[in-house]
Length: 62
Image (cartoon, rainbow, N blue to C red; front, side, top):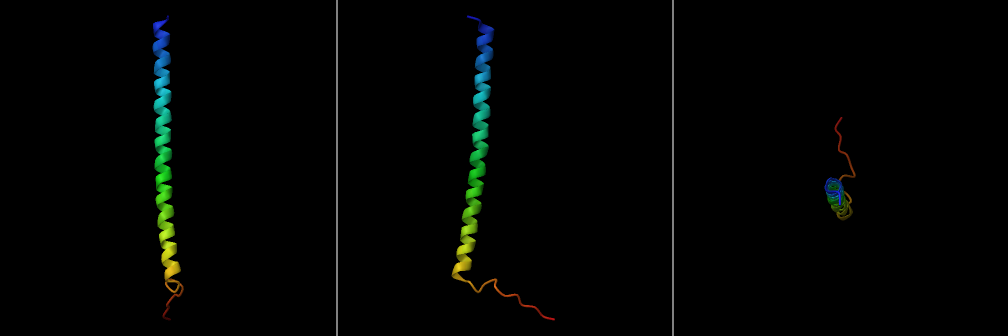
């Protein structure tokens, strides 16, 4: 058994796992922020559906 090759292979596997976990963490953060933005957008649209007259007119003085 070649110890240096085994050590290198194990280090490569660990690096691959660490990179995979980092990518999944970034994807999870992105999904969470997208979900939060969608919930915020839904809350705003619910406000407009309950109060449809709000924001429909512009008052101007000339």
